[in-house]
Image (cartoon, rainbow, N blue to C red; front, side):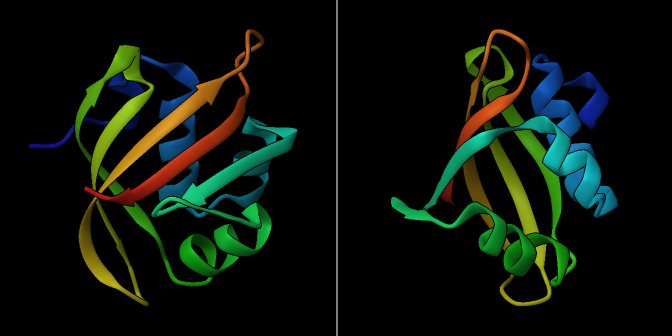
Length: 108
């Protein structure tokens, strides 16, 4: 059983999951600070390039399995057309005004 984006404890993270699943680049970008950063499997990546490749051009989709840390940490069944399906961990840093300044992902 998965957790729907609207049921996640942290609204910004729920909106992130919803934007990914809808492949909504504008909503995704609006959630991020202008200087947001990210890492994948412990290596910092260019966020825009990574999101285009791993989410938007490859039909990325997140099914949230569990959340912790007030909704800022997720375990997700993630799939895309490039890598198939895998269990991943996601951790988010949220600013006081509700934007995502950093997210980290990798295999769980």
